[in-house]
Image 1: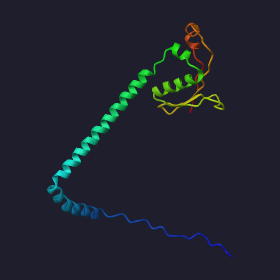
Image 2: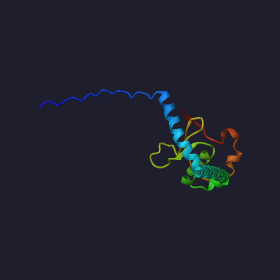
Image 3: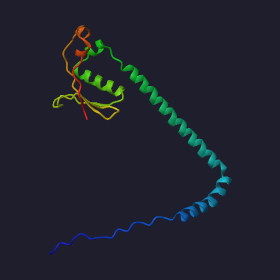
Image 4: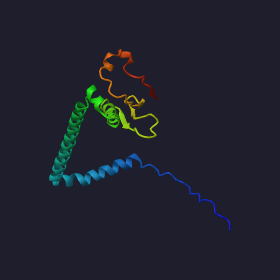
Length: 159
């Protein structure tokens, strides 16, 4: 028994509706609907009130979201002593949160098999950052006594 090939169907594109037909339909609808809406004016008033309430609700939510974001970013200011007191996992989350505060889309990846990428982030310019958080214990005043050029490791960005 031979197998049949696929059925070929001709695809005809739908013809666009002419502009004059669209304008005519809109005018007919206006002639029918406008007198009805004028006699039932309370429907228009109710729709206006609903639209105003929805706009106020959306505006309030946006203001509230912005206020929460400001409060969250104010809370994300950590002192060196606070960072020094964190365990390795909390330190990775703190770095992730600080990068998010600064406008990056960051995620914490640390764990077994993370290929030395504890936090991955994409900054607003589109650059990809791979951060390796290394625990060296308490350094005390050592960091303050080092010259500024030696205080951090070299930073690489991946494009």
